[in-house]
Each structure stands twice: as C-alpha cells, then as structure tokens.
Image (cartoon, rainbow, N blue to C red; front, side, top):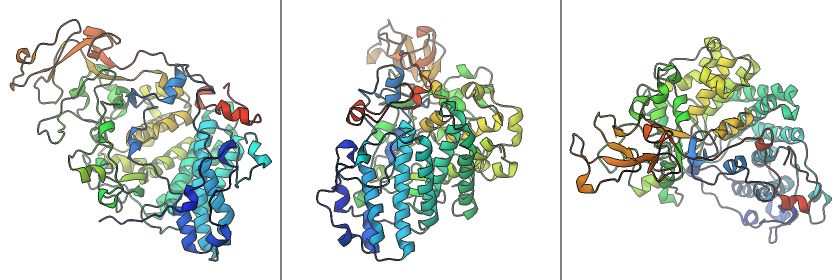
Length: 595
C-alpha cells in the first residue's frame, strides 16, 4: 500500500509570479512577512515542500531531441539544425521566477526558532533545488548571471553580465555539497532526502567533468578530473551505504519493465526518489495516447542495433544485421529491448491476438513500450508511479567516472555495470573490453582515445538502460557528439514488395504493394493461412503518395521518416542564445559561441 505526503503549497510561493527584468526584481505582491512566517519547523517545511517540482511520466516522451527516436514534433534542436532559429525566435529558457522563490527562502529561513540541524536540513533542500535550477541553465547557456539573493527594483545586479561557467559550476557544487551534508536521510515518501541529493550531486559532477574533458572550446580540460573524482566519490558513497539495490527477482524478461509499469514503487529497492500517482488521491497521469509510438515519436533502428545479443555478443557483428527484418532482429537479444519496445508477438489488451505493427508515414514501424500501461482500467492507467532517481544511474555514474579517470577495476565493474547486466541475464563486462572495442561504437564516438573499449561499453549500457528516460540528449551534449543528430532516424527493414510476418508466428500479416497500385476493397483483400485479411501498404520513396516510405522505394530498404538536411555546427549548437529581448533590456548580456 502506498504511503503519501500531502503537500500544501503555501500562498507566498504561488504569488511570486512573473517578474520584469529577468523576474528577479519584484517583491511578492501579497506576501506574509518573513518575521511572522519563518518561525517554526512547520513554516520551513511548508515553504520547502511548496518548491517540489519533479519529473513525471511525460519524461518517457523526452527523447525526441535525440537519436533514439524519430519524431514529428517541432523539436528545438531539429529546428536549430535546420537553420531556422536565432536569438530572435528562440525565446525560452530565460525564466527566473523559481530562483527567486528559492532565494527568498534562503534569505529568511535563519529567522526560525529551531535547532541549527533543522535549519540546515531545509536550507539544504532549498540549495538542492537551486543547484538543479542552475544546472539546467548552465546546460543551456553555459555562462549565466549567478544570483544568490532576491533583488529589489533598481538594484544594479539586475543588469549583471553573464558570470563564467567556472563560477556557475563551482556554485552548483557548493550548493549540492551543503545539501548532501545536511539534508536528512529520513524524509516523507515522495520528497527528496539525502540520497536523492547525492544522486543529483553525482550526476552534476559527471556532467561537468565529461563536458570539460571533451569540449575543448571551453579551455577547461585541466579541471575535468576534479569533477570526475567528485562523481566517483559521491556515487561510491551511495553504493557503500547499501541502502539501495538493483531490482532483480531473477526474472530477466520482466524485472526491468516492472520499474516503469508499477502501481507502487515506494518500496522498490532500486528507486531512490519516486513521483507517486494514484487516481483515488487526485494525483494521476496517463501518457498512453502519446507514448506508444504512432503519434509523435517512434524508436529508431540505431537504438535497436545498440542492444547486445543475449549471450553478450554484439548485434552489429551478426552477418547481415542491417538487413534483418523485425522478427529476426528481436531474436535472442538483451531482454531490456523487449521491455522497452514492442516485440513480435506482444499482445495489446483488450485484443487477445498479437499486435501487428502499424507502418504510419513519418514513423519507424517500431513502437515504444516503456511508459505504456497495457491496461484498459482507468485507475491502473492513471496510477503508475514514476522513478525520478534509480540506483541504476548511480552505478552507471560510478563506472563512467572511474573509466574516464582511467582507474576502473574489475571489482568496481562487478559492483556497478555488471549488476545491471546480471538483471538482464547478460554475461559480465570485463576489462578485456579495452582490447576489442566495438567498431560501430567507435564510429559514433570518435573522440574517445583512452580506455576506449570500456568507455564505449559503459556508454552502451547507459543508452539501453535509460532509453526514453530523458538522459540521452544530455549525454550526447556532454560527450560532444552532437553530429550524431544529423542522421535522420530510420526504421524497420523490408527487402522489397511482398508479404511479411510481423508477429513471429510464421504467418504473413501485411503486404507491401507498389505505390502506383490501388489497395483492393475489403472483399478483395488477400487472406493469410489463418483466414485473416492482410494489411496493405503502398510502398514508395519519401515525399511520394506512398503510405509507407522505404529508402529505396519499391525495391526495399529501411523505413525513412524525413527528407530534411540536418547540420550540426560546432561548438555553436551545443548552446542556445539568450533571447534577444533580454539582451535589449540588458546590453551587458553578450551572446557567445557565434550566436
């Protein structure tokens, strides 16, 4: 049974509102006096709980900016690569309201008549939220003004220039270090405690360490190791605490998927922080209509090809792998693949028969399963919990940081990556990977020059373990491999016109005919050996009047989803411009990296 925390959002937080001049100059219009409000622990708790803002199940739709999916959405990075954006029409990302709410608390919490440990706990949570806020700003803009307090109209600081990335990163680390040392371990379910703080701490340190290592335009590579060492230390602390473990009941074909379809994750050993949903408690969310993969996004073939075979060998080493059809490419693969994407023979309730993949135009033919709830019950659909932080991330952070430092041992591999592989029923990864790097991954990540085999395999693990969990874009950016996004996503392979089995029972389900042909009427459609009518598609080149686009038209190839030219300009496109209106208001804000 779920445990709940009932959060009352205090009036003052909601009334900070949108502010002019960067939203930092306006005192709350109808605020409670700090001297009257910030007095008890209840006051502090009420305010800080009002700052809670956690990812939810929409996260399963946030890989649209990556090479994991094809999407029909107007994704910003696609528009950037298409050359249609500039500082005039990129207007998002420069909101500061949340920071003011956080800093307002940090300026006033000290007035409370409570023990120092109590004050520090709530201050730690506020600083955790501030670090999270600034980490997002740094990812987007790199250099931004650092504000540690609320400002009044007329304050000169409102017109500050951008502060250097080094100051922002060090300030983020200082906030997280304070939070890690002061936030309590025992907190209400669904709210961040010590180990949630530690997870973000390690994540931020890994991000900045690898970013500095691979982005030579920053000229900060000499300080990269300090951040990597922090990432390894903090993730190592979490491991050593033995508070969490990989959810593994010995069912490799089910355990991974349970994390994304469970009605209750509050007692799951792997979940460090959970966002709780329950229709009966008036907190619900249903993303089925968009997550399934035939509306706005669909998995890309490149992601499928990254998964290993069940015996641990590389799929891309299989002879003719690039021309395997849907049924064949799912055979004997890493079980996580069939718990992330719809597989041949999967049954979508309430239909008792195996689902036949839909080949909609501009989609890949593959359907996403992670985040989809296979039910028709409304309470079930709306009551699936979301794992905000998983222990799996801690293990991946630990292994990657040590591999980048060049100190990763077999024992550390066994205590991290190999726990994930054990859940999936895969053989262990060993240090011998350095002697035999994957050529396919080397093409994707050409700037890895040391510990190549290990780093590439850790990146593989990270991609498949966290597919559709909003990790991939940040990873591509910090590893400086944005050019991977210039390849338009492709889908299923078909050898040409003809009949195909998509359910794995050996019986044909669909038929591809030439785009110039007419799909027959229902009473004229051919039936398969089971007496079921085949589903017809007219195949042709993209941009034609075909109902499914193949790379080589009626002679076959992969499904193709778009015919736009993508260009990734380095280093410019790793960053976004400050909206031009803000630069006009504050001329001290200068654009960087060619914007």
